[in-house]
Image (cartoon, rainbow, N blue to C red; front, side):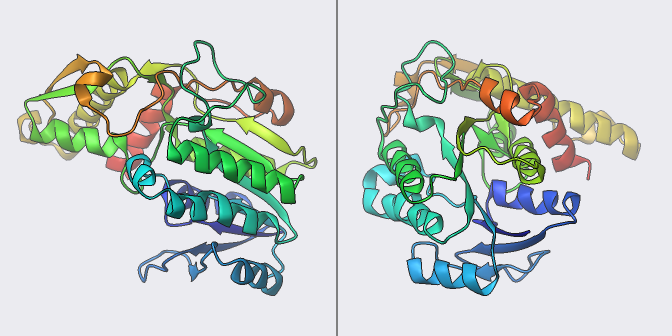
Length: 310
């Protein structure tokens, strides 16, 4: 099968590239809005907001499945420039869905209100409160309208060894500051992009195709404060392990000694509201595709190993 990975320069796109060798029976094509000269795999430029360009690419390369990893994910900038977010999160998704092949599209927990108190299921009412959430919901709806055979995977709190993300930011700030305030009243599940890529890989390899909306995050729940504390703990453990392997005194390693202080959301003064509760129920994807769901602390430890041990 010829498979197109869009948005291949991002966190999930890079993890899909690492997944490709595990699927030798398929041929992968990688596109993004730019083609880095130092990319380890050939990357072609494709503007997915250009419908004709998308259709031409799919026809030229006989694409049978599109995995759409591209998205406008800057929540604050989306609020300031909703038309641009709409072009990428909705118009482009419709373009991919109308190209005449199957689609796996990645969406977000932001389609919900964030006021829930139980894990959100796929058929729960949606009520986005931000431009980002609205445009991602439009993408879901417009994709299913033109491609009812599509699969939509909603995820949340994504991070990886690639690109800029919360894990890398908390490590940088932990090394730079003596004290750091992190919100404790927003609850969700950190998700290692490699685990989401692995779930997509299992769907690619299945003999059956069951279209519809699915939820996938890692397992467990925590606050951003809890997440940060665990990031710092695992970072220091990795540094001490490196010191041992390299025969260096622990004092020579850049350890995080920053105090992490729990704060409320109003103290942080977000420009755009964040969901207070964004835990997703994963029972459906477990049942239909038998996808394993790693616990978030175990997943974070694997990411740290990739960052500092490779």
